[in-house]
Length: 275
Image (cartoon, rainbow, N blue to C red; front, side, top):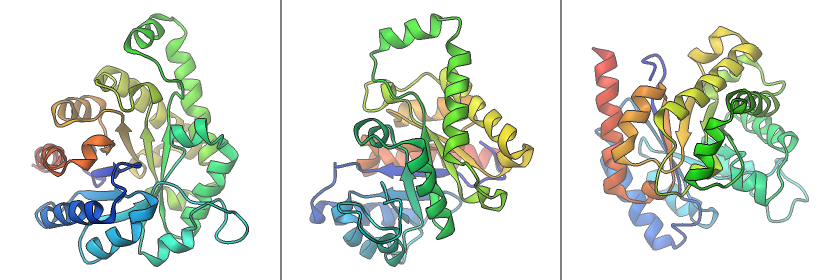
């Protein structure tokens, strides 16, 4: 964790909180606790149908609102998509782009994702660019991959391409708005997260890619986080060892008590850095 960058916790509710009553209650629980958590950005990415009621709850609090996706154009003939204009009307300031499900299940290409990244930046919305392996695997398959002498090189190339293509022609002046999330599909929604050494390797490749593309100053501006089965139990090890700027939560982002434990972990680590 870099004390020059504000730590960030992102909660992707996916399609877990779909009823307005439940979403409102959970948003209230989060916003009530945020008053004592200055110095950390907390971002909620509700399911599409609950974005507006969540906005009504958190609009006068420090909690940030975001979307799980946007269309590649502001308005027009794109049935079924969510417009950035609506997100802005609801004071949304973040949007997740390139999630492995969007890439794999909805066939979103790097070109489409890049258009969305630039659309977000042009509207002063911070893109959360997700990168990482797209194949679902079990733990044994991942261990076998790590034994492959070419694995690290292949992973580095994969992450460079995802970062390069996702941020193609992005202005350096916008780098401090960008969050990159390493979210390997094989670790998302599993019983175990990726190991801290693996996360450190992957995020170092991401930072190396940023340096190659934008120069050394990029790593002082872009926040790099990890997402994939993050829990209160494993968050302190991965954040400290992998030098993360925060985490992206899935199912544990739908449990306010577990969420608060992760917030406390990051608060304590930040306090250590500020000494």
